[in-house]
Image (tube, rainbow, N blue to C red; front, side, top):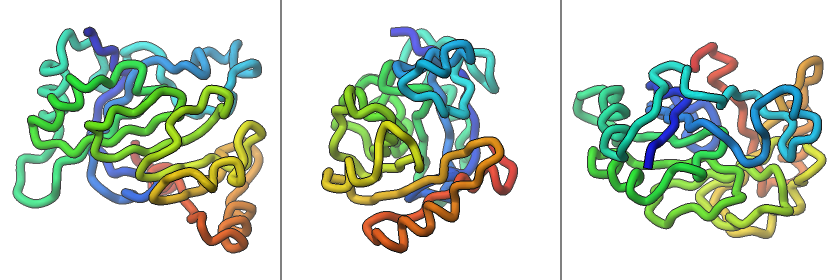
Length: 210
């Protein structure tokens, strides 16, 4: 299988349970809820995405012919020092369109703990070390378990009460990044009134890193 990667880089995890943790990010090209083209945004199942996942022209992006090729490339970005478990976050677009067991094991063979950030419309392989689900379309939703759910709030398609009964270890609400609107206060209020949920901020945007 050839893997199409938009970008590959070393940074800090900006969101959710692992906020602040050093990580290699592998952003796969493509998504099953939006083409990525602005002309299709209004009719997309996910119409508020703030990420460019089209093509392979991002930072260190490209097409990798084998799982080992991509795992070797990702490993180049992890600091070769003692301390800290190597960590890679597979994201997108929708990473599970491409992230398969062979690639997961190739990452793990090089020492990585492997996380995925998925919209939950495809089943996550059991070989993953960490599963973060961010639901956008309940009509296609299948991944009802995971290590964390990170729900963008508010959104019309999915509300917290729709998924609060599911089997996740951590529940996060993340304010919708919408031009001209700041939804942080409404997320704070919801979390205070519903303490099953915790606030997640996009700290990478706040501090100005990728």
